[in-house]
Length: 306
Image (tube, rainbow, N blue to C red; front, side):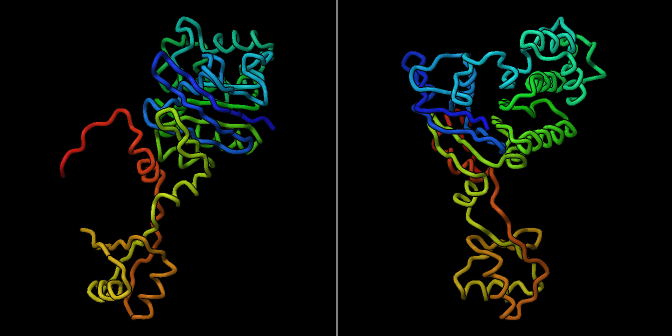
């Protein structure tokens, strides 16, 4: 099993500290979502992990070794940081062939990843003719080329169509299921919630959270219950007597915040309130993320009055 281990990692650019004594680990066998507002230090951290920049202090290792110490690194670590990094004059196949040759990766892997990423039909086209989504797929193909134990992807869904988004989601889950270490940076909360098991969240270069996805949401978003009834007055009265505030929406359904189905259901049933719907409304990753990072957002538009 290979992990990514970041210990007291710090990076300063002049007087600006982009990463501030950051410590966390990314374990094998799960997809870790890497989140944070713009300017939080995510991209800098990924560059430090991949040896593209030097830390001011602290360490970032993969399997206990610095990336720069790895021999034939594509066999151990696959990464996508910039989908526009491929030379535009090369074909997609030739771009992958150059990478394979530089790391002594068998040529058959080029055809395998072209098939896996859906680019086989476009393999002879020059990269400059690729759409953003196709370049994204090519970058993912390059990351998978060496069949690595560790995969780091920055915004892998960027530019992908709906089919591509479903494909990348399934790919990430499969890679983790095979026991690989998967770290994915993203600003898309709904997408991250669909594939991540664990979260690492940064703000202003510091660690804000390092926790399982479900625990992260449950700790920051109170449970609520959604209701529909044919007797709204009775529903409101019963809930009010037991200290619950019910909010009625324009479409006729009700929301009871800070409540669970196991509490509300027996309460209304015992009072004879007729129910058409009784469901739990789980908190979302977006709600929990915004709650945590509200004070750490460097760039934000001013709020407008309703």
